[in-house]
Amino acid sequence: MRPSHVGSRSLFTFGFAVLAACLYSPHYTRAQATSPSMPINIVIQHDVPMKTRDGVVLYADIYRPRSSDKFPVILMRTPYDKSANWAVSPVFKMVPRGYVVIIQDVRGRYTSEGEWYPFKHEQADGYDTVEWAAALPYSDGRVGMIGASYVGATQMLAGIAQPPHLTAIAPNMTASNYHDGWTYQGGAFEQWFDQNWTSQLAQNTLQRLIDQNTNALVGAPALPLADYPVFNFGQLPADAHLTAAIAPYYLDWLAHPDYDDYWKQWSIEEHFSNIAVPMLQVGGWYDIFNAGTLRNYLGAKTHGSTDAARTQQHLLIEIGGHAGFGRRIGDVDFGPHATENVYTDVILDWYDFILKGIANEFATDKPVKVFVMGANEYRQEDDWPPPQAQLTKYFLHSAGKSNSLAGDGSLSASAPKNELPDTYVYNPASPVPSVGGPLCCDANHMEPGPRDQRSVENRDDVLVYSTGPLPRDLEVTGPVTAELFVKSSAVDTDFTAKLVDVAPDGFAQDLTEGILRMRYHASPEHATLINPGQIYEISLDLWATSNVFLRGHSLRLEISSSNFPRFDRNLNTGEEIKFARSFVAAKNTILHDAQHPSALVLPIMPSK
Image (cartoon, rainbow, N blue to C red; front, side, top):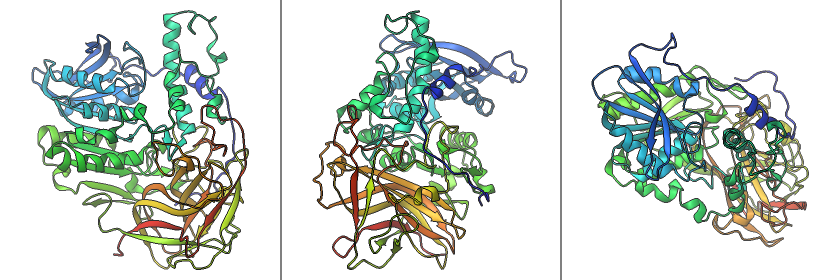
């Protein structure tokens, strides 16, 4: 179901507001041992030190049963403040179930010493923390880990370091490759997330510098925080006003657009063969890291270094992830089943199964559980992708005028014959705005999740291809790709695509989307400019979905060259991202004829 009225969106820019909101918002409250709501059978120790192998001290809060017995440990390593209510609240379900819960600030964050640099220290520090936790006097020597997003990355990176006492992990909504799927996607810079996340992290980094030095900014006169412009959102990545003192990693990200050794040193995908423990991967269809969740499941299952790693992989895919929780995500009400599988309960059942040998659903259910949109219910599968899904091509058709909803674009199972190509002008000065989708992490300024796409589809620089109303329900569950034959007047440009479910009243619900920067069409490791006017065959990864297109609904594919500010604008000049400022409009073309059969490739589930 959806509301009768859906608000329209417009492209906007804003400056320092996000960082300022972070800096001046109330601090998270610390869970106090004296709180009247604190169970008296829980022992709490704040700011317990642990020294890493290189002498840096990390601090953790420990919650444990008031007992002389020993218990398994559930560990969370976070950059987001170990005393935050969201981190502490699950403790009061976990400890009574017989677990020691340890929440640690990672290096360089909040109470912990050292330099904050994403991913850099998490393997070694994760290894050291797991072994320290296993040796505590109230630990039985077995350690599991929990957490989402970057807190999932701390699990994955500890996992590939193989600490001997790490027994299992449960990463939630996290990536598998911190180049593709965290900082870039298909070669395009994930501008909204990268600038948004970095600005929020800069709050604590800036405050630490101020605390250490009243002239915090490397000897410069101290500035009021609100006068220190970190980002001008919606502008060019190269225009970010950052200093190396605040976020050197952001500047490094811009300096490494290729998938090179800078990224490979901590890429999970390069180290799947180091995974030695069972994992429960949790993701969401509208989550910004869902491709990574699916890759982590498949990678460990295929390449894990132990039988346990290969055979005890479990996968749960919900709806929203970073885009939201509950039955209503974005503009869509997904029904009462959407509230099943509460994360804390699922994690506790996972560790009851792994660490205590309790024969619960993880012993009896199939290893994969996904929420099927449209049908709006969870279903179990033997594997991912479901082996019974049949890859089916829906070919693009038109008379050369598929521009916008008013155009003549269509999709069908019939291969094209002699058809005119579709052409549009992509102007970086007027990009197609992002409307919903897997956005993170500022819903106040950019609403994530499923949103009505018609405002986008009314643009002439968006090609629209639709089936007619479907005569029966059609389920798509698995990876989605667009195999396209393209050309451009520019030496570099982007191609974007989006799979959409169109209701009989016209509501156009985005399901999944993707982007490809043409300089990386051959390889993510080496940028190569294209030849203007030359035809290229590309495979555009739209990630994956599970959705029943109900009877009377239509399948739709959108194609364009921008999705901004979720991704940075390709300026079409071939300049490196850290320098690019010149704009050139590109005439981009999609061919769909007998020699160039462009198609949407969908995993169709057998009819019941």
